[in-house]
Length: 190
Image 1 (cartoon, one colour):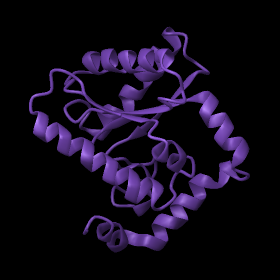
Image 2: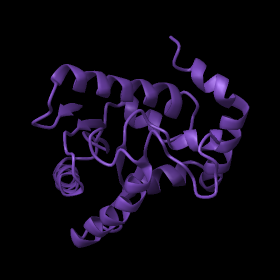
Image 3: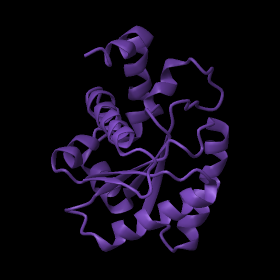
């Protein structure tokens, strides 16, 4: 399920951005098993790729509210998760990081606490205390700044089915360390 949220300045570029995000999801997130829950919703075509031209925090919050409302109104068997891709807003990682507080406030203000969770993905993602080029950061590095909207009920089901869910983070870092920067670059060669 793909949507260019209007108005997007250049539809062809927008389609390329969505395509890049899908390749990243297939090769990194699913291919490296960084999220063991992603493959199921991907295969069932329950992922929405929403690309927005929002360029300010307020515009992005409005788009986020729209996407959350759409998820509330749509059966999870048709739409389980959304990737809200926002290449024109929050391009600096520190701005993005601090913006996540506003995202959490919006979720609370809409009464969606315990209903939705937002995962943060960014091309410059950096875990606290890490160096910018630390390979572990690449577990959360997407082609474009992205807010990943997840249903809490889906997370609960996935965690119940995955015996060691709390170990995913550590396993992902080990995967990335084995892969290294050269291995990461090779993912994108074909």
